[in-house]
Amino acid sequence: MHLELGAGALDVLDVPCGESGVPSHRVVLGHPNRSPDLVTHRQAAESGWPLAFDGPSLARHATDRRMPDAVRALADAGSGDRLLLGADTATAAARSVTAAPGCPVRRAGVRPRLVRAVGEEPARRILTENPGRAFGAEWRC
Image (cartoon, rainbow, N blue to C red):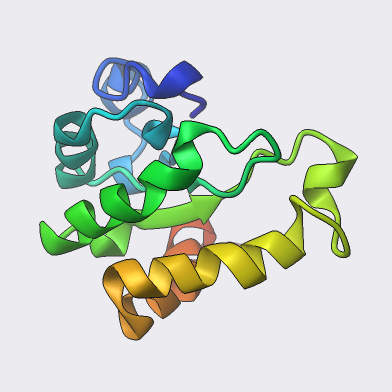
């Protein structure tokens, strides 16, 4: 679920999780770190919603420098299993596998910062296990 400027994380989920009965772990909140409100981040994570933090930005938005601290605060609070790292890939440049701000920046810049913030094993889980759990599906044939 897209959070414009990271706002409204606690307000937007009444419809999918309340009225429609979608389990909270199946609704990913996107861009929470566009808001510096760590209390709201923590409340959303404690409610079971996966949080997809923004990755690198060509404009070097505040999200780039806030991400490690916000992720560390949530991991320290016991919500590391609900953290995802995403990227706003609305442009071809953002999806690039060879140029910034695409995959090379995420691999060379973001991962080391994440490791410094939370450690190697939590970073590995954030980048591999958490997305698998958030986006995995039970297929019924």
